[in-house]
Structures are given as C-alpha cells and as structure tokens.
Length: 154
Image (cartoon, rainbow, N blue to C red):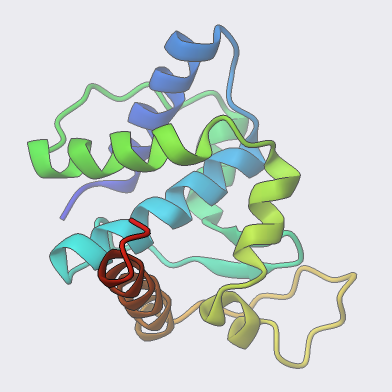
C-alpha cells in the first residue's frame, strides 16, 4: 500500500510538468478518488489507506487539504510500477477535465451518495465514505467495462 502524500505528490508534480501550472485542490481530490477506485478495479485492494469524506462537491481527503494548502506535496516518487501505471492511466483520462465536471462525475458514485445521506446539499458534512462502498463503485465500473468489451465497444 502506498503513502497518500507520495501519491498526491506524484499527481501534483505530473500536473505541473504537463500543464505548466499547479493542479487545483478540487481536481486533486477527484483524481485521487478515481485513482483509488481504479486501483481497486485492477488489484482488488486499495492504493492507500486514507479515508475519503463525502463533501458537497465530491470526495475529499482531509489530510490532502492541509498538505495542499501548505505546499507540502513534493515527496520523492517511491511508488511501485503498478501504482504508477494506474495513476498514469487515471491522470490521462481525468486531468484534462475541469474540476466541476469531475465533481459531477463523483456525484454519480454510490460511495459518495451513501456518505451524503441526511446531509443538506449546501453543507459539507463529515461522513466517511466506506471503502466497501468504493469497492461497489469499482465493481460497477468493472462490470460496465466487461459488457462494453463483450459488445465490441471497448
């Protein structure tokens, strides 16, 4: 399992290198969520152990808020090759999208919806997103990909 700060640093540095600007915080949280989900799809275990929270604009990792705001996401890359492969795949797919589009995408996730039960739309709330629910999202995507492949749409 990877350290969250190293994973986030990898994404931040890759974004800076490819786009010549700092990734915004919302986009970072969403790419981290999609990375966790994709790693579950491919490896049936989490990429990192930290907990996402279902805030009003989508999944958030509280640790990342502090690291991002204090410009502390510059860890040396010590990630495994399988982790880098997943991160690069997710980065390629989601980094070109704007943050609000990514937020909307995460609002379709079972894990986010369940974490928002009983919380008004305008509030962040403080409900954790369960790893078991993120696994359900991963399984749903895995099944969709399989169906697309069988239909010749992949």
